[in-house]
Length: 288
Image 1 (spheres, rainbow, N blue to C red):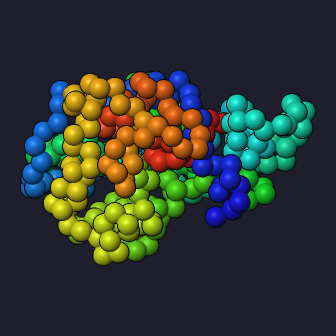
Image 2: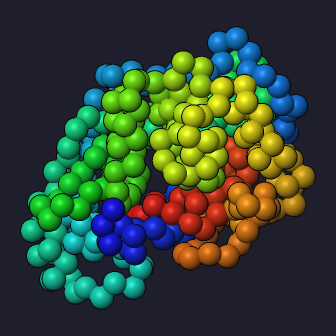
């Protein structure tokens, strides 16, 4: 991991635009949390995104406007325009051209822990596709992920994030025996669902489920315990708690490096109210 990614990348840029992005994904507000139970038959693997749709998303990420945006993103080393980086317009334009951004590899679907699975809804998959991601690299070796979402008129680029988690972890899952990679953004954990078990792909996931992972039913109980009382419609939701989820205390937090998301975005995120606090789920989301 580069020093750029350690120092500059892991901050949150508060932005109203992300509210629209989340709503465009069709993330709804549920009437309330349901009782937890073992996943029903057929629960587990998310519904895959068709290869043709991913190809369309990748084509959108390849547009000249997006490549230009990537050039400026790399010129600023991933720091958003409001991040306080001192860089003149002429200097940024020169650095953007020198960055010579290009896309690398296939566009992949990014699956995220599903609120219905958390609630214990029978037959709910462990995760749902949230967006598509395309890896981008610069001439000096920087890596970024271009995020696209599907809308009525096709696919639209909504974000650029430093680093390559969105493509790296699916590749790691594939090389280790297949399965579906997904993330639990509230603790920044990446897993793979393989053979009815939830296996860890990063350190956060290993701390969550252990090195050997756990079966799907046990994982459902775990995430229900963590977030079941924080779903839309819950007392937590109605109280307007919007700071985030702190794994060590299972309580909302408001502090931490970087600024928090707007309240509406926190409430909409993944259908799990206000769990995306500073330094956790959205710490890598940076608008280019």
